[in-house]
Each structure stands twice: as structure tokens, then as C-alpha cells.
Length: 516
Image 1 (spheres, rainbow, N blue to C red):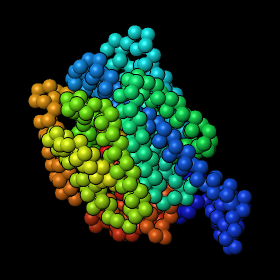
Image 2 (tube, helix red, strand yellow):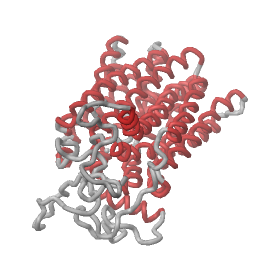
Image 3 (cartoon, rainbow, N blue to C red):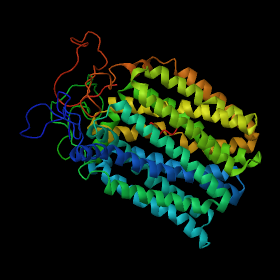
Image 4 (cartoon, rainbow, N blue to C red):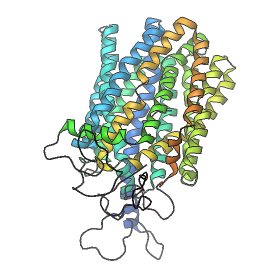
């Protein structure tokens, strides 16, 4: 359902009187069978999308333990472990960057289903070819590249469906993104723990089989649970509709991509150009992408190389590695639940940077100091609590600032910018461990994490996070047109007045997951 110009869902033709949410009891407060069925139908869109996200991410996190460990024990080289991580993440980032227009063109539901099927097949080929003794190292590099290439569009498509799912379920924006954050953290808790146990018990290959099964289950959830009419191709708004930030010349199209439709016959290149033009004119989204790019690079180095090497060299083994990540995930679940409940009442900038300071440097330093494992568990639990604040806040900001018809192409480009350092994290960590050892590499990475957080916090663009935010009392839920005042233009008449009429125009990331 598309939002109406005044920010309310459009009532069915012929409907009269005040609208009532499906499944809401009448004045007597009684809930009959129709009310129960109505509530189930109301929650079906958001529960379907979140379930698909959870199973796909669980499999991915299982693989995040199994695949690096498989490479480490078969090659004995931290450098090759980093190369394999690069070969998966570089195509993943590229696929996210360039698949956005396809998600808008063909619809996120279809792209998600295709991506899950292809991901399941490519992941399953790794253990299959290994059993057949037909998997040389170069073959593994090719397969992990294909895994990244097929997983990127599927992950993007599922996230693009979150605003529509939340609107259909009548949830405020920050509550919906908070639930998505809880889902991600549940996967982050269950996946690594299961991966660590499986690797320690029967080896890394069965864990990869579980990863393939999770992708297949994700396809099934999207096919059966997500409503068939949801995740349709994006419809560009009509000419002259809506309001938006002032146009700037030189965007390559001569139009404001937030409000003007593409010309007739506009194809992939035009859609991609519109996404780029919108993104480069939003300073807050660019600053978010730059900071998350640095953070993701360091987190990738940690997950792909530094933690597996620490686990091996310290003698703690893969079970301890999985337990650390699982404890952090459990803390993140609590943090996500807290932000889901009270996040709409708190300042986003304060919450975001408090979480970032908690989740960053302490993790690296406690491992670099080779502290007692119990101390490391406590530090990772607290870090997880702080990390639970990050993605719900960033996702809410992103969904508010990007118009619905641009979510795929702008979201894909934004994810790609934020993830651009991830392919190099493993490579740099592998080289650093080889040259200096794992403890100095961890200490330096933690210092960079802290410096990046403190320096980025001084930028003035972050003030936009709390301007014109959705989800305040009395405002419409996510998906209903939250109209926000664009950044004022000097001497522009009426700059302080809210735009009226037209289509949804969201003004002021992991970010993709980013997986913080």
C-alpha cells in the first residue's frame, strides 16, 4: 500500500467512517476469532521479513566461524585466511552497490528469493567438492566469491522490505528497526555459537551445510509467509509530486531524483545515476557511510583473522571463539530490546556514540592483553549491549531520509560505501599478524577504532540525526508519509515551513547490517 499525501494509509474504496486497525477489539474490548485472525494478518508482513532475515543471517554467522577456521587449519596461514575473506566480501560489496536498481526494478521479494536459492547452492558446493577431493585452493576462492556475489542482493532485498512490512503491520519506524536489530543480534548469538560447537565437535564442513540449509529456509519463508503482493517493483512518483531539498545542477540527470520520475524508458543506468545523485547530496548519509566504512574494516579484520588467530595461539580453540561472539550477541539482544522500547524517547546522536565507544576499542584491547577468558567474556558482553544501540538508530535514520521508490538503489550504494573496507580488513589483518604478531595487531586496531569514533563525533552533520525524526507521539507509523523539513537554504522564502502535499519525502545508515 502506498502512502497517501497526507501521511495516512489510503482507505479502501467505498469505506466510510474512521479507519480501524485489523484485529483491534471493538468498544466492548472483546476479541473474537476475527480479531485474532486480524492480528495474525497484521503481524504477518513484519514477522515474515524478520524471520527470513534471521535464518539467512544465522547461516551466515555460522559460516563466519566455519569458513575462516577451515582455511586456517587447511593452510596454516593467516594471510590466506585474509585472502579468502577478501574474495567473499569484495563481490558482496560490489553486488550491493550495483544491484539496487534491480531490486527497485524487479521487486525485493523476487530478488530475495533468487538470491537465497543461488546462495544455498554455492555454499553447498564447498563441502560437496571437498568430500569429492575436488576443491583446490583456487576453487575455494572462486566459490567464496560466488557466495558473496549471490548473498549481497538477497541481503539488500530483505532490508528494503522492512519499511513496507512495518507500515503494513502499523509499527513506528524505530520499533520496527529495533525489532530488526533484535533479529540480527539473535542470529549473531545463535549462529557463531552453533558454528563454534559444530567446528569443535565434527569440523567446519557440516557447519557450511547448515549455512546452505539456512539460505534454503530463508527462500521458503519469503515464499510462504511474506504476502505475495508485498515487495513489488518500486513505482516512481508522478511528475511534480512531493517536495524535496533544493535541486543542484550537475547531478547527471537535470532532475531531483527524490521527486521527479525518470524519463520514459529509463533503464538500469538511469536508476543507478538517480541513486548516486540523491546520496551525494545528503551530507549526513555520507558521513555515516564514511564512519561505518572504517568501523566495518576493523570489525572485519577482527572476525576474519584476528579472533581466529587469537583462539588458536592462545589455546582457547574454536569453541571459545564461538562463545565470545555468542556472549556479545546476547548482550546485543538486550541492548536492541532496550532501544526498541525507549529509543524513540532518547537522543539518537548520544545513544549512537555511547554505543560505539562501548563496542569498539575494549574488545580489541582485552584480547591484545591476553586477559583471563572470564574477563574477555565480560568485556564482550558489555560491548554487545552497546552494539545493540547502533543498527536500530542508523536504520531508522536511513529509512527516514530515503524516499521509498529510491530505497533499493540508494540503500545499495550506501551499503556498498559503508562496507567498502570489509574486503580489505582480512587482508590487512593477515599482513599485520604476519609482520608484527597478533597481539600488536589487535592493540593498533583498537586504537584506530577509538580515534575514528572520537574524531567522527566532532562533525556537525550528526546533529541532523535528531531533526524531524519519525516515531514521535502523535506521528504516523513508518511507511506513512513522515514529512520532514529539508535543510534550509540561505534566503530561501519559507525555508522553515514544512513541505505539504505530494508523495512521501523523507529527509534526514548499516547500514547493513553493518554488522557492528
